[in-house]
Length: 323
DNA sequence: GCGGATCAC
DNA sequence: TATGGTGATCCGC
Image (cartoon, rainbow, N blue to C red; front, side, top):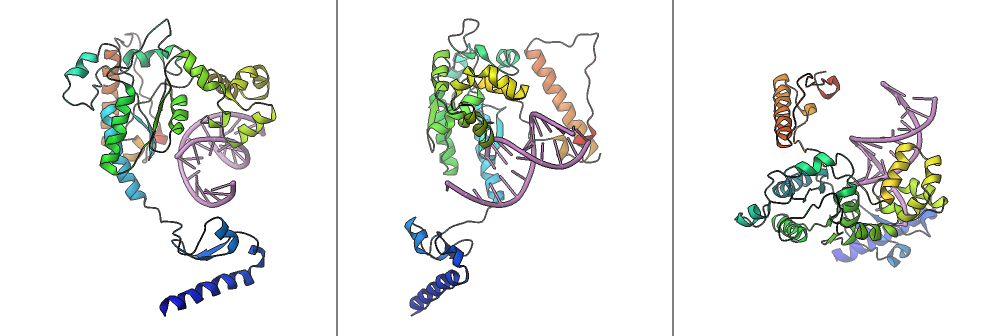
């Protein structure tokens, strides 16, 4: 009885809608609330859109933040300086300088990589790009320490799933630009490693559509396509042209992309920013710990501040709530 | 320094 | 395949 009544109501809904909005007649259309469809027209049904289909769930950012925090706790164990890009994405540095194999072997925790001396030499050399990060590069031969990065990453993803019942995908590559692209390769719930050899990187770049690269969006793609450029290797072949048509920051970016270069510099992740601190003493405390971190870093790298100079603290009123 | 465009999420 | 809203960055003025 109730069922039939409901049925009639849905039928009426659809017909009413079609009557009142004839312009929707030939378009896939559905009637319903935020969370459930009551009915749909036949065009929509062709696409599998039917009554009683759940459509939109309300967002719950408090929940997302909480889960994100759990995942970040796991991230931190692999790279304490990991860089979150959003609630569900982050860059981690899995590079371990040579000579830390023993420490790893002695570690009782299989999932833990010692962060000791992490990326010191590496980050000093590469504030930005890292052309000599390749394993076959003559100047240096960084090595991924431990069983393999792939296993470490697999384990990390496994732990994320155990803890949150959420699957994750990962891209493993010599730099962030490539890692981002790689992370798309085996979505969902997979990973892809691009070896750190010049050959592998160039092969990978060769036929990579420019649109895949983070930073090249819809508009840039259209413009490049209009110039006959659709892949990254095209970018490299047209640098002269591009340097005339685009701004310097734009075309140098294109050039880096075409060479498979990207940033390897993952800035220190600070849970706290000055902006979030309203009390002056809190701000001062943060400032102090930042200075101490800096001092520690410099010590590790064997750097000193020349005695004829001063360390300057730049006070940026904009950063503070209190002005 | 501001507004518009582009981009990622 | 589209869609909305937001924050960051870049560019031209």
